Length: 366
Image (tube, rainbow, N blue to C red; front, side):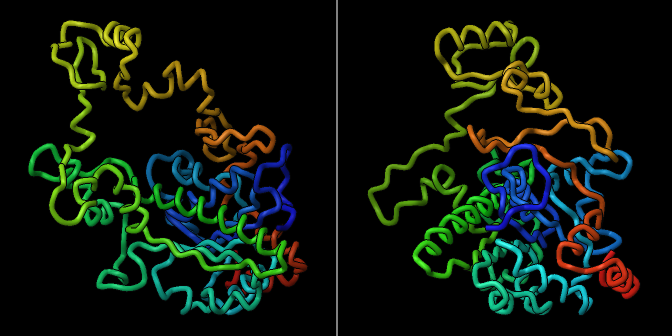
């Protein structure tokens, strides 16, 4: 593992790990930001000019989108045209300096670019090459373009969400994010395995492959699929866990807890919650999204942090959720402008300004 050149006041658990993040949208970038929050030097590689398409998604201010800002913080941005021979050559020059390469192109795309695992592992046998895709690289759906709602449909979640015969979408990109969490965990395990192998003088690089469908079905299986886990006869089916929980309306809102045999409509939310808590019954007020920000438990834990983004202004974002006692995670830097660190990173590779100007004029970098 290599020492990061990114400045940091306190070293995180992954300080010294360099990650080339060639991914876009959510599943890859969110996996990378988990590792960046933990100290890794993540170089986000984007097309010059337009960058990652998620830069323009959702709520924004001054051209900065909230979702992009969170899942691309703590990264450096390098603007490279991968389709340009000189741009590809720069990536090949970066690969020996990296511990991890992360990409979420559709199957076959990296091979067309000449940046697939079989090609690049010769340059860096210790590389953890991580490929995320929608539905694997075999089978009738392998080449299909996939977004989160596609996995919600194929994995059975939409049917499970339905209280009637009408399927219902989950109103968050659940499988993009589940895939990101799974990928980050897999990368961390691969880095650990590499260290153990290297101690025995064995090569530790490998190819990690992960599909959203795999991650989604794994995520669903323990509870949503318990009635489909046993094969053959003699099975005692059970209702879904969701049927063991109830949402009850109160005089001024709603609570979620075990099913009640009484009408709560004449009682305040606060009174019902206090009664349940005193009797050690799991319960929560149903917060609006706006109320989450000022929830006393969220505030007491310090879950949300105020930041000042140079483009977006005053913002709030959640801290990294795992609290390390000696290698703390931190929001060390804001999401970068497209190519903000191009000169810095290419200088680390030994290129001078004249060489960079020529690359820019040729359309290889931005």
